[in-house]
Amino acid sequence: MASSTLNQLTVLSRNLKDRVLASSSMVVAGQTPFDTVFTHDVCSVRYYAPANAKYKTPLVIVSPLAVNMLVYDLQPERSFIKYMMEQGFPVYLIDWGKPTRKHAGYTLETYIKDFLPKCLDAVRAHSKSDEVSLHGWSMGGGMSVVHAAIVECKGIRNIITLGTPIDGHANGAAGKNYKRLSGWLKKARINLRKVPAKLMYTPGWMNVIGFKLLDPVSAIKGYSELIKNAHDRDYVAQHANQAAFIENLEAYPGGAIRDWFCSIWMENETAHGRFTVGHEQVLLSHVKCPVLCIAGKSDALSNVPCSKGLMNVIGSADKEFFVGPGGHIGIVSGKEAPGTLWLKTSSWLAAHSIAA
Image 1: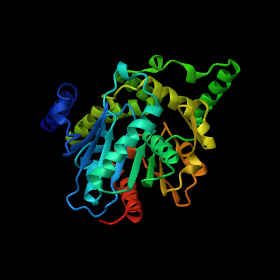
Image 2: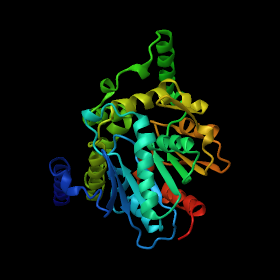
Image 3: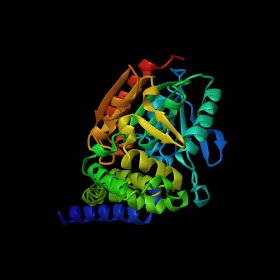
Image 4: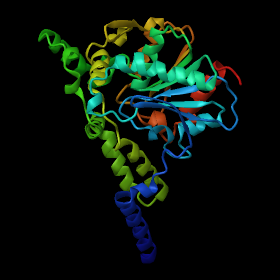
Protein backbone atom coordinates (compact mmCIF):
# COMPACT_ATOMS: atom_id res chain seq x y z
CA MET A 1 0.00 0.00 0.00
CA ALA A 2 2.77 2.42 0.95
CA SER A 3 4.67 1.47 -2.19
CA SER A 4 1.59 2.17 -4.35
CA THR A 5 1.07 5.57 -2.72
CA LEU A 6 4.73 6.42 -3.20
CA ASN A 7 4.53 5.49 -6.86
CA GLN A 8 1.45 7.68 -7.32
CA LEU A 9 3.18 10.61 -5.65
CA THR A 10 6.23 10.09 -7.84
CA VAL A 11 4.12 10.13 -11.01
CA LEU A 12 2.19 13.18 -9.80
CA SER A 13 5.31 15.17 -8.92
CA ARG A 14 7.05 14.22 -12.19
CA ASN A 15 4.02 15.32 -14.25
CA LEU A 16 3.74 18.65 -12.42
CA LYS A 17 7.48 19.21 -12.66
CA ASP A 18 7.42 18.64 -16.42
CA ARG A 19 4.35 20.87 -16.81
CA VAL A 20 6.06 23.74 -14.99
CA LEU A 21 9.70 23.35 -15.99
CA ALA A 22 9.57 21.47 -19.29
CA SER A 23 6.14 22.23 -20.74
CA SER A 24 7.57 22.66 -24.24
CA SER A 25 8.39 18.94 -24.30
CA MET A 26 4.67 18.22 -23.94
CA VAL A 27 3.50 20.60 -26.66
CA VAL A 28 2.50 18.92 -29.91
CA ALA A 29 0.31 21.77 -31.20
CA GLY A 30 0.77 23.20 -34.67
CA GLN A 31 2.39 20.14 -36.23
CA THR A 32 0.06 19.52 -39.19
CA PRO A 33 2.12 20.27 -42.35
CA PHE A 34 1.13 23.24 -44.51
CA ASP A 35 2.36 25.39 -47.38
CA THR A 36 2.41 29.17 -47.22
CA VAL A 37 0.76 30.23 -50.49
CA PHE A 38 0.53 33.99 -49.96
CA THR A 39 2.12 36.72 -47.86
CA HIS A 40 1.22 40.37 -47.65
CA ASP A 41 2.50 42.86 -45.12
CA VAL A 42 2.19 41.18 -41.70
CA CYS A 43 -0.28 38.46 -42.75
CA SER A 44 -0.05 35.18 -44.65
CA VAL A 45 -2.21 32.34 -45.97
CA ARG A 46 -1.54 28.70 -45.14
CA TYR A 47 -2.75 25.77 -47.22
CA TYR A 48 -3.46 22.36 -45.71
CA ALA A 49 -3.96 19.81 -48.48
CA PRO A 50 -6.38 16.92 -47.84
CA ALA A 51 -5.21 13.44 -48.79
CA ASN A 52 -8.49 12.86 -50.62
CA ALA A 53 -10.29 16.05 -51.69
CA LYS A 54 -14.05 15.48 -51.82
CA TYR A 55 -15.05 19.11 -52.27
CA LYS A 56 -13.98 21.81 -54.68
CA THR A 57 -15.12 24.67 -52.45
CA PRO A 58 -12.22 25.48 -50.12
CA LEU A 59 -12.72 26.22 -46.44
CA VAL A 60 -11.00 29.44 -45.37
CA ILE A 61 -10.43 29.89 -41.65
CA VAL A 62 -10.51 33.60 -40.85
CA SER A 63 -8.79 33.80 -37.49
CA PRO A 64 -9.41 36.61 -35.00
CA LEU A 65 -6.74 39.20 -34.42
CA ALA A 66 -4.37 38.71 -31.48
CA VAL A 67 -4.55 34.90 -31.38
CA ASN A 68 -1.85 32.47 -32.46
CA MET A 69 -2.77 29.65 -34.81
CA LEU A 70 -2.20 26.78 -32.37
CA VAL A 71 -5.86 26.78 -31.30
CA TYR A 72 -6.89 25.33 -34.68
CA ASP A 73 -4.29 22.56 -34.50
CA LEU A 74 -4.03 21.93 -30.78
CA GLN A 75 -3.33 18.19 -30.73
CA PRO A 76 -3.53 15.38 -33.29
CA GLU A 77 -6.86 14.22 -31.85
CA ARG A 78 -8.10 17.78 -31.25
CA SER A 79 -7.10 19.53 -34.44
CA PHE A 80 -9.93 21.27 -36.28
CA ILE A 81 -7.69 21.64 -39.31
CA LYS A 82 -6.82 17.94 -39.43
CA TYR A 83 -10.48 16.98 -38.89
CA MET A 84 -11.71 19.08 -41.82
CA MET A 85 -8.90 17.77 -44.03
CA GLU A 86 -10.00 14.22 -43.22
CA GLN A 87 -13.54 15.13 -44.29
CA GLY A 88 -12.13 16.03 -47.70
CA PHE A 89 -12.07 19.85 -47.54
CA PRO A 90 -9.15 21.90 -48.89
CA VAL A 91 -8.31 24.02 -45.84
CA TYR A 92 -6.77 27.48 -45.90
CA LEU A 93 -5.91 29.51 -42.81
CA ILE A 94 -5.41 33.28 -42.70
CA ASP A 95 -2.70 34.08 -40.17
CA TRP A 96 -2.69 37.77 -39.24
CA GLY A 97 0.90 37.48 -38.06
CA LYS A 98 2.68 39.30 -35.27
CA PRO A 99 1.79 42.99 -35.32
CA THR A 100 4.10 45.33 -33.44
CA ARG A 101 3.81 48.97 -32.38
CA LYS A 102 4.60 50.07 -35.91
CA HIS A 103 1.28 48.43 -36.93
CA ALA A 104 -0.69 50.18 -34.16
CA GLY A 105 -2.45 52.42 -36.68
CA TYR A 106 -3.98 49.50 -38.56
CA THR A 107 -7.77 49.66 -38.28
CA LEU A 108 -10.52 47.18 -39.08
CA GLU A 109 -10.76 48.93 -42.44
CA THR A 110 -7.15 47.84 -43.06
CA TYR A 111 -8.05 44.23 -42.44
CA ILE A 112 -11.57 44.05 -43.88
CA LYS A 113 -11.06 46.15 -47.02
CA ASP A 114 -7.39 45.48 -47.79
CA PHE A 115 -5.84 42.40 -46.19
CA LEU A 116 -8.84 40.04 -46.20
CA PRO A 117 -9.81 40.59 -49.87
CA LYS A 118 -6.19 40.06 -50.95
CA CYS A 119 -5.97 36.84 -48.94
CA LEU A 120 -9.25 35.52 -50.35
CA ASP A 121 -8.22 36.34 -53.91
CA ALA A 122 -5.03 34.37 -53.31
CA VAL A 123 -7.08 31.39 -52.07
CA ARG A 124 -9.37 31.51 -55.11
CA ALA A 125 -6.38 31.61 -57.43
CA HIS A 126 -4.56 28.78 -55.65
CA SER A 127 -7.62 26.54 -55.31
CA LYS A 128 -8.96 27.38 -58.78
CA SER A 129 -12.36 27.91 -57.19
CA ASP A 130 -14.40 31.06 -57.78
CA GLU A 131 -16.11 30.66 -54.42
CA VAL A 132 -14.92 29.99 -50.89
CA SER A 133 -16.51 29.13 -47.55
CA LEU A 134 -15.51 31.32 -44.62
CA HIS A 135 -15.12 30.03 -41.06
CA GLY A 136 -14.72 32.86 -38.57
CA TRP A 137 -14.27 32.45 -34.83
CA SER A 138 -14.98 35.44 -32.56
CA MET A 139 -13.73 38.63 -34.26
CA GLY A 140 -12.88 36.51 -37.32
CA GLY A 141 -16.59 35.82 -37.76
CA GLY A 142 -17.42 39.50 -37.57
CA MET A 143 -14.75 40.36 -40.12
CA SER A 144 -16.07 37.64 -42.44
CA VAL A 145 -19.68 38.84 -42.21
CA VAL A 146 -18.81 42.50 -42.74
CA HIS A 147 -16.58 41.72 -45.72
CA ALA A 148 -19.34 39.57 -47.22
CA ALA A 149 -21.81 42.44 -46.77
CA ILE A 150 -19.46 44.86 -48.53
CA VAL A 151 -19.00 42.60 -51.58
CA GLU A 152 -22.60 41.34 -51.34
CA CYS A 153 -21.28 37.77 -51.06
CA LYS A 154 -19.57 37.81 -54.46
CA GLY A 155 -17.07 34.95 -54.40
CA ILE A 156 -18.35 33.75 -51.01
CA ARG A 157 -20.46 30.61 -51.03
CA ASN A 158 -20.97 30.08 -47.28
CA ILE A 159 -20.18 31.63 -43.92
CA ILE A 160 -19.80 29.93 -40.55
CA THR A 161 -19.49 32.10 -37.46
CA LEU A 162 -18.37 30.71 -34.13
CA GLY A 163 -18.75 32.61 -30.87
CA THR A 164 -19.03 35.90 -32.74
CA PRO A 165 -20.52 38.76 -30.67
CA ILE A 166 -23.26 40.68 -32.44
CA ASP A 167 -25.64 41.97 -29.77
CA GLY A 168 -23.02 43.18 -27.32
CA HIS A 169 -25.52 44.59 -24.83
CA ALA A 170 -27.21 41.17 -24.55
CA ASN A 171 -24.00 39.56 -23.30
CA GLY A 172 -25.03 39.00 -19.68
CA ALA A 173 -23.71 41.22 -16.90
CA ALA A 174 -20.81 42.42 -19.06
CA GLY A 175 -23.24 43.54 -21.75
CA LYS A 176 -25.29 45.51 -19.23
CA ASN A 177 -22.15 47.22 -17.98
CA TYR A 178 -21.12 48.13 -21.52
CA LYS A 179 -24.58 49.58 -22.10
CA ARG A 180 -24.30 51.73 -18.96
CA LEU A 181 -20.81 52.88 -19.93
CA SER A 182 -22.04 53.72 -23.42
CA GLY A 183 -24.81 55.87 -21.98
CA TRP A 184 -22.37 57.66 -19.70
CA LEU A 185 -19.97 58.37 -22.56
CA LYS A 186 -22.79 59.83 -24.66
CA LYS A 187 -23.80 62.16 -21.84
CA ALA A 188 -20.17 63.19 -21.40
CA ARG A 189 -19.89 63.64 -25.19
CA ILE A 190 -16.88 61.35 -25.37
CA ASN A 191 -16.36 59.60 -28.71
CA LEU A 192 -14.01 56.62 -28.37
CA ARG A 193 -13.65 56.41 -32.15
CA LYS A 194 -11.58 59.58 -31.97
CA VAL A 195 -9.05 58.07 -29.57
CA PRO A 196 -5.68 57.81 -31.42
CA ALA A 197 -5.00 54.26 -32.55
CA LYS A 198 -1.56 54.16 -30.96
CA LEU A 199 -3.10 54.71 -27.52
CA MET A 200 -5.27 51.61 -27.94
CA TYR A 201 -2.42 49.30 -28.94
CA THR A 202 -2.14 46.34 -26.54
CA PRO A 203 0.91 44.02 -26.55
CA GLY A 204 0.48 40.25 -26.38
CA TRP A 205 1.22 39.91 -22.66
CA MET A 206 -1.51 42.43 -21.87
CA ASN A 207 -4.00 40.48 -23.98
CA VAL A 208 -3.15 37.31 -22.05
CA ILE A 209 -4.01 39.06 -18.79
CA GLY A 210 -7.12 40.66 -20.25
CA PHE A 211 -8.37 37.37 -21.67
CA LYS A 212 -8.08 35.69 -18.29
CA LEU A 213 -9.76 38.60 -16.49
CA LEU A 214 -12.74 38.37 -18.84
CA ASP A 215 -13.42 34.86 -17.51
CA PRO A 216 -11.46 34.50 -14.25
CA VAL A 217 -13.55 31.58 -13.02
CA SER A 218 -12.54 29.41 -15.98
CA ALA A 219 -8.89 30.45 -15.60
CA ILE A 220 -8.82 29.43 -11.93
CA LYS A 221 -10.80 26.26 -12.59
CA GLY A 222 -8.31 25.25 -15.27
CA TYR A 223 -5.42 25.19 -12.82
CA SER A 224 -7.45 23.51 -10.07
CA GLU A 225 -8.39 20.78 -12.55
CA LEU A 226 -4.70 20.42 -13.42
CA ILE A 227 -3.83 19.72 -9.79
CA LYS A 228 -6.74 17.31 -9.49
CA ASN A 229 -5.66 15.38 -12.59
CA ALA A 230 -1.90 15.69 -12.17
CA HIS A 231 -1.62 11.88 -12.02
CA ASP A 232 -2.91 11.68 -15.62
CA ARG A 233 -0.02 12.33 -18.03
CA ASP A 234 -2.37 12.82 -21.00
CA TYR A 235 -4.43 15.40 -19.12
CA VAL A 236 -1.30 17.31 -18.10
CA ALA A 237 -0.11 17.26 -21.72
CA GLN A 238 -3.48 18.61 -22.89
CA HIS A 239 -3.22 21.41 -20.35
CA ALA A 240 0.28 22.27 -21.62
CA ASN A 241 -0.95 22.48 -25.21
CA GLN A 242 -3.90 24.67 -24.22
CA ALA A 243 -1.55 26.95 -22.31
CA ALA A 244 0.76 27.16 -25.33
CA PHE A 245 -2.10 28.93 -27.06
CA ILE A 246 -3.44 31.07 -24.21
CA GLU A 247 -0.04 32.19 -22.91
CA ASN A 248 1.20 33.30 -26.33
CA LEU A 249 -1.39 35.71 -27.66
CA GLU A 250 -0.31 38.37 -30.15
CA ALA A 251 -0.73 42.16 -30.00
CA TYR A 252 -3.87 44.03 -31.00
CA PRO A 253 -3.32 46.84 -33.51
CA GLY A 254 -4.77 49.85 -31.70
CA GLY A 255 -7.05 51.01 -34.50
CA ALA A 256 -8.56 47.56 -35.00
CA ILE A 257 -9.42 46.89 -31.36
CA ARG A 258 -10.78 50.44 -31.00
CA ASP A 259 -13.13 49.95 -33.98
CA TRP A 260 -14.29 46.53 -32.76
CA PHE A 261 -14.87 47.75 -29.21
CA CYS A 262 -16.95 50.68 -30.42
CA SER A 263 -19.11 48.79 -32.92
CA ILE A 264 -19.83 45.73 -30.79
CA TRP A 265 -19.66 46.73 -27.15
CA MET A 266 -20.18 50.49 -26.89
CA GLU A 267 -22.46 51.49 -29.75
CA ASN A 268 -23.87 47.97 -30.25
CA GLU A 269 -24.58 48.97 -33.84
CA THR A 270 -24.25 45.39 -35.06
CA ALA A 271 -27.39 44.44 -33.12
CA HIS A 272 -29.17 46.89 -35.43
CA GLY A 273 -27.60 45.51 -38.59
CA ARG A 274 -24.82 48.05 -39.11
CA PHE A 275 -21.03 48.08 -38.89
CA THR A 276 -18.81 51.10 -39.39
CA VAL A 277 -15.73 50.49 -41.55
CA GLY A 278 -13.71 53.65 -41.95
CA HIS A 279 -16.16 56.26 -43.22
CA GLU A 280 -18.60 53.65 -44.56
CA GLN A 281 -21.54 52.20 -42.67
CA VAL A 282 -22.01 48.64 -43.89
CA LEU A 283 -25.47 47.04 -43.83
CA LEU A 284 -25.35 43.40 -42.69
CA SER A 285 -28.63 42.74 -44.52
CA HIS A 286 -26.51 42.59 -47.68
CA VAL A 287 -25.30 39.16 -46.56
CA LYS A 288 -27.45 36.78 -48.59
CA CYS A 289 -25.34 33.61 -48.77
CA PRO A 290 -26.02 30.57 -46.51
CA VAL A 291 -24.89 31.14 -42.91
CA LEU A 292 -24.36 28.75 -40.01
CA CYS A 293 -24.13 30.66 -36.73
CA ILE A 294 -22.68 28.68 -33.81
CA ALA A 295 -22.71 29.68 -30.14
CA GLY A 296 -21.12 28.03 -27.10
CA LYS A 297 -23.46 27.07 -24.28
CA SER A 298 -21.00 28.30 -21.65
CA ASP A 299 -19.28 31.05 -23.65
CA ALA A 300 -18.83 34.04 -21.33
CA LEU A 301 -17.21 36.25 -23.98
CA SER A 302 -20.10 35.93 -26.44
CA ASN A 303 -23.07 34.19 -24.86
CA VAL A 304 -25.96 32.59 -26.72
CA PRO A 305 -28.19 35.73 -27.01
CA CYS A 306 -25.17 37.83 -28.02
CA SER A 307 -24.18 35.46 -30.83
CA LYS A 308 -27.76 34.76 -31.93
CA GLY A 309 -28.18 38.43 -32.78
CA LEU A 310 -26.68 37.65 -36.19
CA MET A 311 -29.86 35.80 -37.17
CA ASN A 312 -31.85 39.03 -36.86
CA VAL A 313 -29.70 41.23 -39.08
CA ILE A 314 -28.46 39.23 -42.08
CA GLY A 315 -30.49 38.89 -45.26
CA SER A 316 -29.82 35.18 -45.84
CA ALA A 317 -32.81 32.95 -46.55
CA ASP A 318 -30.70 29.90 -45.70
CA LYS A 319 -29.48 30.49 -42.14
CA GLU A 320 -29.20 28.23 -39.12
CA PHE A 321 -28.39 28.80 -35.46
CA PHE A 322 -26.72 26.03 -33.48
CA VAL A 323 -25.71 25.87 -29.82
CA GLY A 324 -22.96 23.47 -28.81
CA PRO A 325 -20.96 22.66 -25.69
CA GLY A 326 -17.99 24.73 -24.55
CA GLY A 327 -16.74 28.18 -23.68
CA HIS A 328 -15.07 30.65 -26.01
CA ILE A 329 -12.02 28.45 -26.63
CA GLY A 330 -13.77 25.13 -26.08
CA ILE A 331 -16.04 25.66 -29.09
CA VAL A 332 -12.93 25.69 -31.25
CA SER A 333 -10.72 23.05 -29.66
CA GLY A 334 -12.47 21.59 -26.62
CA LYS A 335 -12.68 17.86 -25.92
CA GLU A 336 -16.38 17.80 -26.87
CA ALA A 337 -15.94 19.80 -30.07
CA PRO A 338 -15.05 16.93 -32.49
CA GLY A 339 -18.27 14.99 -31.90
CA THR A 340 -20.53 18.05 -31.81
CA LEU A 341 -19.42 21.35 -33.31
CA TRP A 342 -16.90 19.96 -35.79
CA LEU A 343 -19.38 17.30 -36.89
CA LYS A 344 -22.08 19.93 -37.35
CA THR A 345 -19.69 22.17 -39.29
CA SER A 346 -18.53 19.43 -41.67
CA SER A 347 -22.02 18.05 -42.34
CA TRP A 348 -23.45 21.53 -42.95
CA LEU A 349 -20.56 22.44 -45.26
CA ALA A 350 -20.85 19.15 -47.13
CA ALA A 351 -24.45 20.01 -47.98
CA HIS A 352 -23.49 23.53 -49.07
CA SER A 353 -20.27 22.90 -51.01
CA ILE A 354 -19.48 21.86 -54.59
CA ALA A 355 -18.16 18.31 -54.90
CA ALA A 356 -14.71 17.79 -56.39
